[in-house]
Image: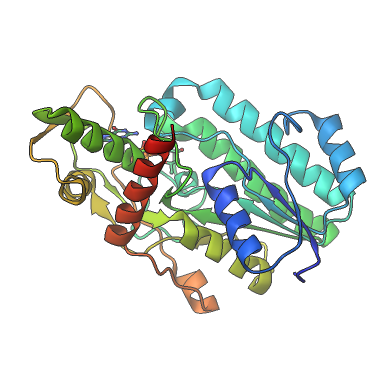
Length: 311
Ligand code: GFB
């Protein structure tokens, strides 16, 4: 990518897309293309084709998706599969038809089987059943990465994909019903501290393990792959270590300074027991993450408090 290349960031209002946009702006890229959902609904094929015809992007970061935590995935199953299939199929097809030079598709670590050997290598894909709470989202993401791979095989286009682990950071969703665990716990502990509550409720048993990566590291990896990788195989992107939900809750409790109790509500599902990515492939290409979980949570909490003050 050159600083005057026409680069489209699909999903630039979301957590990942906004991190990619921030980073490209910081690095001096001048021809960045972005459209809000009101301006361009990516589920509408004709509108997406018209946008690509008019704007002729050369590079595409496909970070637009319907996303959410375990409860949202498990509740809005039809929306998660259909919206994601529509968004990605429209963008990938229009990118191919309009001659985009390179496209990066972003997926998620939930594409791998529920019970996969840990850490999970890229070879685990389609070797077992998916975790039921996020099967619709995972199936859409698998279709997206396969579409990129098969377009590459059949037509020789440079479309690649990456599968990040659980992400967090600025512009995360803090709505307790639809968010992921890390922003949910920041909000719960903050509110409990402010309100002087005696306990905070954490869903499930606390025993599942998750790996967390700051979204600025994810954006860094995406730009790195755009510049350094051209292959059909998807690439895992993660921090390299995981943590139990109980330990995560204790860490957030400590950073926020809440002195009450943690209570586990077993009426909520645990989801997949463990989801640690094997990141040897991207490490061998020369990329490593930089933002530790403690530093990342501390800065995400500052961002959350700033937004609260602005609201
Ligand atoms: O982050 P999360 O919603 O998604 O939940 P997944 C991770 C774990 O944290 C689960 C527990 O075991 C939850 O039960 N948890 C505890 C909580 N307290 C809370 C809470 O207050 N809110 C939430 N949300 N969880 C998602 C997939 O799975 O991961 C998506 O649904 C996507 O498809 C994403 O792949 C990265 O890690 O279980």
